[in-house]
Image (cartoon, rainbow, N blue to C red; front, side, top):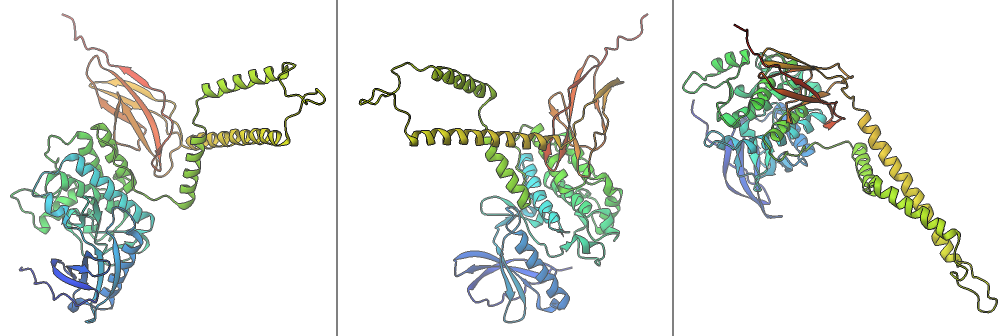
Length: 472
Protein backbone atom coordinates (compact mmCIF):
# COMPACT_ATOMS: atom_id res chain seq x y z
CA UNK A 1 0.00 0.00 0.00
CA UNK A 2 1.53 3.32 -1.10
CA UNK A 3 1.88 6.16 1.33
CA UNK A 4 -0.34 9.16 0.72
CA UNK A 5 1.07 12.53 -0.24
CA UNK A 6 1.00 15.21 2.46
CA UNK A 7 -1.75 17.77 2.33
CA UNK A 8 -1.19 21.39 1.38
CA UNK A 9 0.15 23.41 4.30
CA UNK A 10 -2.38 25.96 5.54
CA UNK A 11 -1.75 29.69 5.36
CA UNK A 12 -1.35 30.71 9.01
CA UNK A 13 -0.98 34.37 9.96
CA UNK A 14 2.30 34.96 11.80
CA UNK A 15 3.90 31.76 10.47
CA UNK A 16 5.96 31.09 7.32
CA UNK A 17 5.87 27.55 5.87
CA UNK A 18 9.26 25.84 5.38
CA UNK A 19 8.78 22.13 4.66
CA UNK A 20 6.91 18.92 5.46
CA UNK A 21 8.10 17.01 8.53
CA UNK A 22 5.85 13.94 8.43
CA UNK A 23 2.45 12.43 7.76
CA UNK A 24 0.15 10.23 9.81
CA UNK A 25 -3.24 8.64 9.54
CA UNK A 26 -5.14 11.72 10.68
CA UNK A 27 -2.74 14.64 10.40
CA UNK A 28 0.34 16.11 8.75
CA UNK A 29 3.19 17.85 10.54
CA UNK A 30 4.88 20.86 8.93
CA UNK A 31 7.89 22.96 9.82
CA UNK A 32 7.07 26.68 10.06
CA UNK A 33 8.97 29.73 11.21
CA UNK A 34 7.08 31.83 13.69
CA UNK A 35 7.49 35.56 13.10
CA UNK A 36 7.20 36.80 16.69
CA UNK A 37 8.90 35.54 18.68
CA UNK A 38 11.09 34.28 15.85
CA UNK A 39 11.64 30.54 16.14
CA UNK A 40 11.11 27.27 14.32
CA UNK A 41 7.96 25.39 15.29
CA UNK A 42 6.30 22.11 14.31
CA UNK A 43 2.63 22.52 13.41
CA UNK A 44 0.34 19.48 13.39
CA UNK A 45 -2.65 19.96 11.07
CA UNK A 46 -5.67 17.65 10.83
CA UNK A 47 -6.53 16.37 7.35
CA UNK A 48 -9.54 18.09 5.82
CA UNK A 49 -11.11 14.80 4.68
CA UNK A 50 -11.15 13.32 8.19
CA UNK A 51 -12.26 16.39 10.10
CA UNK A 52 -15.56 15.68 11.83
CA UNK A 53 -16.97 16.40 15.24
CA UNK A 54 -15.36 13.31 16.80
CA UNK A 55 -11.89 14.03 15.38
CA UNK A 56 -12.21 17.70 16.24
CA UNK A 57 -12.99 16.74 19.85
CA UNK A 58 -10.03 14.35 19.95
CA UNK A 59 -7.74 17.05 18.58
CA UNK A 60 -9.00 19.57 21.11
CA UNK A 61 -8.49 17.02 23.89
CA UNK A 62 -4.92 16.45 22.71
CA UNK A 63 -4.23 20.19 22.72
CA UNK A 64 -5.63 20.56 26.25
CA UNK A 65 -3.79 17.52 27.57
CA UNK A 66 -0.44 18.53 26.14
CA UNK A 67 -0.89 22.09 27.36
CA UNK A 68 -1.48 20.76 30.88
CA UNK A 69 1.47 18.39 30.78
CA UNK A 70 3.99 20.21 28.60
CA UNK A 71 5.62 22.01 31.52
CA UNK A 72 7.21 18.62 32.26
CA UNK A 73 10.82 18.61 30.99
CA UNK A 74 10.28 15.31 29.16
CA UNK A 75 6.97 16.11 27.45
CA UNK A 76 6.83 18.03 24.18
CA UNK A 77 5.93 21.70 24.68
CA UNK A 78 2.71 23.03 23.10
CA UNK A 79 2.62 26.75 22.36
CA UNK A 80 -0.88 27.27 21.00
CA UNK A 81 -3.83 25.68 19.14
CA UNK A 82 -6.38 27.13 16.75
CA UNK A 83 -8.32 26.53 13.51
CA UNK A 84 -6.97 27.58 10.10
CA UNK A 85 -9.02 29.66 7.65
CA UNK A 86 -9.82 26.50 5.65
CA UNK A 87 -11.37 24.85 8.74
CA UNK A 88 -8.50 22.54 9.66
CA UNK A 89 -7.56 22.52 13.37
CA UNK A 90 -3.84 22.86 14.08
CA UNK A 91 -1.45 22.57 17.01
CA UNK A 92 1.77 24.63 17.35
CA UNK A 93 4.50 22.68 19.12
CA UNK A 94 8.17 22.81 20.00
CA UNK A 95 10.30 21.74 17.03
CA UNK A 96 12.52 18.72 17.63
CA UNK A 97 14.92 17.82 14.85
CA UNK A 98 15.08 14.06 15.45
CA UNK A 99 13.32 11.11 17.05
CA UNK A 100 14.72 7.94 18.57
CA UNK A 101 12.68 6.05 15.99
CA UNK A 102 15.22 7.24 13.42
CA UNK A 103 18.26 6.23 15.47
CA UNK A 104 17.70 2.98 17.32
CA UNK A 105 17.57 0.82 14.18
CA UNK A 106 20.55 2.55 12.55
CA UNK A 107 23.06 2.59 15.43
CA UNK A 108 23.49 0.76 18.70
CA UNK A 109 22.57 3.17 21.47
CA UNK A 110 24.82 3.21 24.57
CA UNK A 111 23.24 1.45 27.52
CA UNK A 112 23.73 4.54 29.72
CA UNK A 113 21.76 6.66 27.24
CA UNK A 114 18.95 4.09 27.00
CA UNK A 115 18.61 3.90 30.79
CA UNK A 116 18.52 7.70 31.06
CA UNK A 117 15.89 7.93 28.31
CA UNK A 118 13.86 5.20 30.00
CA UNK A 119 13.86 7.01 33.36
CA UNK A 120 12.94 10.37 31.82
CA UNK A 121 10.15 9.07 29.58
CA UNK A 122 8.76 6.90 32.38
CA UNK A 123 8.82 10.03 34.58
CA UNK A 124 6.69 11.79 31.95
CA UNK A 125 4.28 8.83 31.88
CA UNK A 126 4.09 8.71 35.69
CA UNK A 127 3.32 12.43 35.74
CA UNK A 128 0.54 11.94 33.19
CA UNK A 129 -0.87 9.02 35.20
CA UNK A 130 -0.94 11.15 38.36
CA UNK A 131 -3.10 13.63 36.45
CA UNK A 132 -5.39 10.82 35.30
CA UNK A 133 -4.10 10.69 31.72
CA UNK A 134 -3.01 7.67 29.66
CA UNK A 135 -0.79 8.14 26.61
CA UNK A 136 -1.71 4.82 24.90
CA UNK A 137 0.90 5.04 22.14
CA UNK A 138 4.31 4.85 23.81
CA UNK A 139 6.94 3.78 21.27
CA UNK A 140 10.39 4.91 20.05
CA UNK A 141 9.10 7.11 17.22
CA UNK A 142 7.07 9.13 19.72
CA UNK A 143 10.23 10.01 21.66
CA UNK A 144 11.69 13.14 20.11
CA UNK A 145 15.01 14.84 20.87
CA UNK A 146 15.25 18.55 21.63
CA UNK A 147 18.02 20.79 20.34
CA UNK A 148 19.82 20.15 23.65
CA UNK A 149 19.59 16.37 23.33
CA UNK A 150 16.83 15.91 25.91
CA UNK A 151 14.24 13.20 25.09
CA UNK A 152 10.60 14.29 25.16
CA UNK A 153 7.40 12.27 24.78
CA UNK A 154 5.08 13.46 22.03
CA UNK A 155 1.77 12.59 20.36
CA UNK A 156 -0.96 12.30 22.95
CA UNK A 157 -3.37 12.00 20.01
CA UNK A 158 -5.08 8.87 21.30
CA UNK A 159 -4.65 9.61 24.98
CA UNK A 160 -7.62 9.10 27.28
CA UNK A 161 -8.36 9.75 30.89
CA UNK A 162 -7.91 6.76 33.18
CA UNK A 163 -11.60 6.71 33.97
CA UNK A 164 -12.64 6.71 30.31
CA UNK A 165 -10.13 4.12 29.08
CA UNK A 166 -12.11 1.09 30.17
CA UNK A 167 -15.24 2.27 28.41
CA UNK A 168 -13.78 3.86 25.29
CA UNK A 169 -13.87 2.13 21.95
CA UNK A 170 -10.87 0.63 20.22
CA UNK A 171 -8.33 3.20 19.01
CA UNK A 172 -5.41 3.18 16.63
CA UNK A 173 -2.47 1.39 18.19
CA UNK A 174 1.09 0.33 17.44
CA UNK A 175 1.13 -3.47 17.60
CA UNK A 176 4.85 -4.09 18.34
CA UNK A 177 4.67 -2.10 21.60
CA UNK A 178 1.11 -2.94 22.71
CA UNK A 179 0.23 -5.24 25.61
CA UNK A 180 -1.72 -8.49 24.97
CA UNK A 181 -4.85 -7.25 26.77
CA UNK A 182 -4.91 -4.20 24.48
CA UNK A 183 -4.52 -6.32 21.34
CA UNK A 184 -7.38 -8.53 22.54
CA UNK A 185 -9.58 -5.44 23.12
CA UNK A 186 -9.94 -6.35 26.79
CA UNK A 187 -8.97 -2.76 27.65
CA UNK A 188 -8.04 0.17 25.45
CA UNK A 189 -5.41 1.21 27.95
CA UNK A 190 -4.38 1.03 31.60
CA UNK A 191 -1.42 1.78 33.84
CA UNK A 192 -0.32 -1.84 33.43
CA UNK A 193 -0.45 -1.66 29.63
CA UNK A 194 1.60 1.56 29.73
CA UNK A 195 4.23 -0.26 31.82
CA UNK A 196 4.33 -2.95 29.10
CA UNK A 197 4.84 -0.28 26.42
CA UNK A 198 7.60 1.39 28.45
CA UNK A 199 9.42 -1.94 28.80
CA UNK A 200 8.94 -2.74 25.11
CA UNK A 201 10.27 0.70 24.16
CA UNK A 202 13.39 0.42 26.32
CA UNK A 203 13.94 -3.10 24.93
CA UNK A 204 13.69 -1.73 21.37
CA UNK A 205 16.23 1.01 22.05
CA UNK A 206 18.67 -1.61 23.33
CA UNK A 207 18.09 -4.34 20.76
CA UNK A 208 17.53 -2.23 17.64
CA UNK A 209 14.22 -4.04 17.04
CA UNK A 210 10.89 -4.44 18.75
CA UNK A 211 10.72 -7.21 21.39
CA UNK A 212 8.82 -9.78 19.32
CA UNK A 213 10.31 -8.99 15.95
CA UNK A 214 12.37 -11.76 14.28
CA UNK A 215 15.14 -10.77 11.91
CA UNK A 216 14.33 -12.23 8.50
CA UNK A 217 11.12 -13.81 9.79
CA UNK A 218 7.43 -13.11 9.45
CA UNK A 219 6.83 -9.80 11.21
CA UNK A 220 3.35 -9.14 9.91
CA UNK A 221 0.60 -8.03 12.26
CA UNK A 222 -0.79 -11.53 12.79
CA UNK A 223 2.60 -13.10 13.52
CA UNK A 224 3.57 -10.31 15.89
CA UNK A 225 0.29 -10.54 17.77
CA UNK A 226 0.69 -14.30 18.19
CA UNK A 227 4.17 -13.85 19.69
CA UNK A 228 3.09 -10.96 21.90
CA UNK A 229 0.24 -13.10 23.22
CA UNK A 230 2.80 -15.64 24.50
CA UNK A 231 4.74 -12.79 26.16
CA UNK A 232 8.13 -14.48 26.05
CA UNK A 233 10.52 -11.91 24.56
CA UNK A 234 13.98 -13.18 23.69
CA UNK A 235 16.99 -11.53 25.38
CA UNK A 236 18.19 -8.32 23.77
CA UNK A 237 21.27 -10.10 22.45
CA UNK A 238 23.69 -7.48 23.74
CA UNK A 239 26.60 -8.64 25.86
CA UNK A 240 26.75 -5.33 27.73
CA UNK A 241 23.16 -5.63 28.99
CA UNK A 242 23.27 -7.12 32.52
CA UNK A 243 20.98 -9.94 33.54
CA UNK A 244 19.24 -7.62 36.01
CA UNK A 245 18.13 -5.31 33.18
CA UNK A 246 16.95 -8.27 31.09
CA UNK A 247 14.90 -9.34 34.13
CA UNK A 248 13.42 -5.84 34.56
CA UNK A 249 12.29 -5.77 30.92
CA UNK A 250 10.95 -9.33 31.04
CA UNK A 251 8.92 -8.44 34.12
CA UNK A 252 7.49 -5.33 32.47
CA UNK A 253 6.26 -7.53 29.61
CA UNK A 254 4.69 -10.24 31.75
CA UNK A 255 1.62 -11.86 30.18
CA UNK A 256 -0.46 -11.06 33.25
CA UNK A 257 -0.76 -7.35 34.14
CA UNK A 258 -0.32 -8.13 37.86
CA UNK A 259 3.09 -9.63 37.12
CA UNK A 260 4.44 -6.31 35.86
CA UNK A 261 5.77 -3.35 37.80
CA UNK A 262 2.75 -1.78 39.49
CA UNK A 263 3.45 1.69 38.11
CA UNK A 264 5.76 3.72 35.91
CA UNK A 265 7.42 4.87 39.14
CA UNK A 266 8.33 1.29 40.08
CA UNK A 267 9.69 0.77 36.56
CA UNK A 268 11.83 3.90 37.07
CA UNK A 269 13.22 2.54 40.34
CA UNK A 270 14.16 -0.70 38.60
CA UNK A 271 16.06 1.19 35.90
CA UNK A 272 17.80 3.36 38.50
CA UNK A 273 18.87 0.22 40.36
CA UNK A 274 20.51 -1.03 37.15
CA UNK A 275 22.27 2.33 36.76
CA UNK A 276 23.63 1.97 40.27
CA UNK A 277 24.71 -1.60 39.58
CA UNK A 278 26.64 -0.45 36.49
CA UNK A 279 28.27 2.44 38.36
CA UNK A 280 26.43 5.05 36.27
CA UNK A 281 25.21 8.39 37.54
CA UNK A 282 21.59 7.89 38.56
CA UNK A 283 19.18 9.71 36.26
CA UNK A 284 17.01 11.92 38.50
CA UNK A 285 13.30 11.29 38.87
CA UNK A 286 11.17 13.96 37.16
CA UNK A 287 7.82 13.62 38.90
CA UNK A 288 6.18 16.72 40.39
CA UNK A 289 5.18 16.54 44.04
CA UNK A 290 1.91 17.83 45.45
CA UNK A 291 2.09 21.45 46.58
CA UNK A 292 1.77 20.57 50.25
CA UNK A 293 4.42 17.86 49.98
CA UNK A 294 6.78 20.21 48.18
CA UNK A 295 6.29 22.88 50.83
CA UNK A 296 6.99 20.36 53.57
CA UNK A 297 10.10 19.12 51.81
CA UNK A 298 11.49 22.64 51.42
CA UNK A 299 10.70 23.44 55.04
CA UNK A 300 12.45 20.32 56.29
CA UNK A 301 15.42 21.05 54.05
CA UNK A 302 15.79 24.51 55.59
CA UNK A 303 15.54 23.06 59.08
CA UNK A 304 18.24 20.57 58.24
CA UNK A 305 20.53 23.39 57.22
CA UNK A 306 19.91 25.15 60.53
CA UNK A 307 20.93 22.00 62.39
CA UNK A 308 23.97 21.35 60.30
CA UNK A 309 26.40 21.10 63.26
CA UNK A 310 27.29 17.69 64.63
CA UNK A 311 26.44 16.58 68.16
CA UNK A 312 30.08 16.90 69.18
CA UNK A 313 30.03 20.58 68.18
CA UNK A 314 26.84 21.14 70.16
CA UNK A 315 28.35 19.49 73.23
CA UNK A 316 31.50 21.59 72.87
CA UNK A 317 29.46 24.76 72.63
CA UNK A 318 27.53 23.77 75.75
CA UNK A 319 30.79 23.14 77.64
CA UNK A 320 32.12 26.52 76.55
CA UNK A 321 28.85 28.19 77.60
CA UNK A 322 28.94 26.55 81.03
CA UNK A 323 32.55 27.59 81.50
CA UNK A 324 31.77 31.15 80.49
CA UNK A 325 28.81 31.34 82.86
CA UNK A 326 30.90 30.02 85.78
CA UNK A 327 33.58 32.59 85.07
CA UNK A 328 31.03 35.38 84.81
CA UNK A 329 29.59 34.47 88.22
CA UNK A 330 32.72 35.76 89.97
CA UNK A 331 34.04 38.72 87.99
CA UNK A 332 37.18 40.54 89.14
CA UNK A 333 36.51 43.61 91.28
CA UNK A 334 37.81 45.96 88.61
CA UNK A 335 36.56 44.08 85.60
CA UNK A 336 33.43 46.20 85.19
CA UNK A 337 33.42 49.90 84.25
CA UNK A 338 33.01 52.33 87.17
CA UNK A 339 31.29 55.68 87.44
CA UNK A 340 34.10 58.21 87.88
CA UNK A 341 31.95 60.39 90.17
CA UNK A 342 30.78 57.67 92.57
CA UNK A 343 33.28 54.88 92.08
CA UNK A 344 30.46 52.40 91.72
CA UNK A 345 30.33 49.86 88.92
CA UNK A 346 27.99 50.70 86.08
CA UNK A 347 25.36 48.25 84.86
CA UNK A 348 25.24 47.29 81.21
CA UNK A 349 23.24 49.80 79.17
CA UNK A 350 19.62 48.89 78.42
CA UNK A 351 20.44 48.38 74.75
CA UNK A 352 23.08 45.79 75.61
CA UNK A 353 20.69 44.00 77.97
CA UNK A 354 18.01 43.88 75.31
CA UNK A 355 20.55 42.54 72.83
CA UNK A 356 21.57 39.82 75.25
CA UNK A 357 17.95 38.82 75.84
CA UNK A 358 17.32 38.88 72.11
CA UNK A 359 20.26 36.57 71.44
CA UNK A 360 19.05 34.20 74.15
CA UNK A 361 15.51 34.10 72.72
CA UNK A 362 16.80 33.50 69.18
CA UNK A 363 19.00 30.69 70.48
CA UNK A 364 16.04 29.04 72.18
CA UNK A 365 13.96 29.35 69.00
CA UNK A 366 16.75 27.89 66.89
CA UNK A 367 17.09 24.95 69.25
CA UNK A 368 13.32 24.41 69.08
CA UNK A 369 13.37 24.54 65.28
CA UNK A 370 16.27 22.12 65.14
CA UNK A 371 14.45 19.73 67.41
CA UNK A 372 11.25 20.03 65.41
CA UNK A 373 13.08 19.42 62.13
CA UNK A 374 14.92 16.41 63.51
CA UNK A 375 11.69 15.03 64.94
CA UNK A 376 9.91 15.48 61.61
CA UNK A 377 12.70 13.73 59.70
CA UNK A 378 12.80 10.88 62.22
CA UNK A 379 9.02 10.54 62.13
CA UNK A 380 9.10 10.52 58.31
CA UNK A 381 11.61 7.68 58.21
CA UNK A 382 9.68 5.78 60.87
CA UNK A 383 6.55 5.86 58.74
CA UNK A 384 8.21 3.43 56.32
CA UNK A 385 8.21 -0.07 57.83
CA UNK A 386 11.50 -1.76 58.68
CA UNK A 387 12.38 -5.37 57.94
CA UNK A 388 13.82 -6.81 61.16
CA UNK A 389 13.96 -10.57 60.72
CA UNK A 390 16.01 -11.49 57.65
CA UNK A 391 16.82 -15.19 57.55
CA UNK A 392 19.19 -17.03 55.24
CA UNK A 393 19.34 -20.69 54.25
CA UNK A 394 21.99 -22.29 52.07
CA UNK A 395 20.69 -24.80 49.56
CA UNK A 396 22.18 -26.66 46.63
CA UNK A 397 23.87 -24.00 44.52
CA UNK A 398 21.90 -21.13 46.06
CA UNK A 399 21.12 -19.11 49.18
CA UNK A 400 17.54 -18.10 49.98
CA UNK A 401 16.95 -15.02 52.11
CA UNK A 402 13.46 -14.56 53.56
CA UNK A 403 11.71 -12.23 55.96
CA UNK A 404 8.25 -11.40 57.27
CA UNK A 405 6.14 -8.70 55.67
CA UNK A 406 6.58 -5.64 57.96
CA UNK A 407 3.36 -4.09 56.67
CA UNK A 408 3.73 -3.14 53.02
CA UNK A 409 1.14 -0.88 51.44
CA UNK A 410 0.07 -0.70 47.81
CA UNK A 411 3.01 0.61 45.80
CA UNK A 412 5.64 -0.38 48.40
CA UNK A 413 8.48 -2.70 47.42
CA UNK A 414 11.65 -4.27 48.79
CA UNK A 415 15.15 -3.22 47.82
CA UNK A 416 17.62 -6.03 48.49
CA UNK A 417 21.37 -5.46 48.53
CA UNK A 418 23.44 -8.64 48.23
CA UNK A 419 27.19 -8.30 48.79
CA UNK A 420 27.00 -4.61 47.95
CA UNK A 421 24.97 -5.13 44.74
CA UNK A 422 21.51 -3.56 44.59
CA UNK A 423 19.04 -5.91 42.93
CA UNK A 424 15.83 -4.87 41.11
CA UNK A 425 13.00 -4.03 43.49
CA UNK A 426 10.55 -6.81 44.31
CA UNK A 427 7.38 -7.44 46.26
CA UNK A 428 7.84 -10.98 47.54
CA UNK A 429 9.39 -11.39 51.04
CA UNK A 430 12.06 -13.79 49.83
CA UNK A 431 14.91 -13.89 47.36
CA UNK A 432 17.11 -16.70 46.06
CA UNK A 433 20.59 -15.94 44.75
CA UNK A 434 23.04 -18.39 43.16
CA UNK A 435 25.99 -19.45 45.31
CA UNK A 436 29.09 -21.61 45.07
CA UNK A 437 30.64 -23.80 47.72
CA UNK A 438 32.63 -21.74 50.20
CA UNK A 439 30.80 -18.46 49.43
CA UNK A 440 30.08 -15.97 52.20
CA UNK A 441 26.93 -14.09 51.12
CA UNK A 442 25.40 -11.14 52.97
CA UNK A 443 22.12 -9.30 52.37
CA UNK A 444 20.17 -6.33 53.71
CA UNK A 445 16.54 -5.48 52.95
CA UNK A 446 14.95 -2.02 52.79
CA UNK A 447 11.36 -0.99 52.14
CA UNK A 448 10.87 1.75 49.53
CA UNK A 449 7.73 3.90 49.44
CA UNK A 450 6.94 6.72 47.01
CA UNK A 451 10.56 6.91 45.94
CA UNK A 452 11.88 7.08 49.51
CA UNK A 453 13.72 4.30 51.33
CA UNK A 454 13.32 3.44 54.98
CA UNK A 455 16.02 2.17 57.34
CA UNK A 456 17.86 -0.97 56.25
CA UNK A 457 17.56 -4.26 58.06
CA UNK A 458 20.43 -5.75 59.98
CA UNK A 459 22.80 -7.53 57.63
CA UNK A 460 22.31 -11.30 57.41
CA UNK A 461 25.23 -13.42 56.22
CA UNK A 462 25.24 -17.07 55.20
CA UNK A 463 28.26 -19.33 54.73
CA UNK A 464 27.86 -21.94 52.01
CA UNK A 465 29.51 -25.17 53.12
CA UNK A 466 32.19 -26.69 50.95
CA UNK A 467 31.08 -30.01 49.49
CA UNK A 468 34.00 -32.37 50.07
CA UNK A 469 32.26 -35.30 48.43
CA UNK A 470 31.98 -38.83 49.76
CA UNK A 471 35.03 -40.59 51.13
CA UNK A 472 36.50 -43.72 49.61
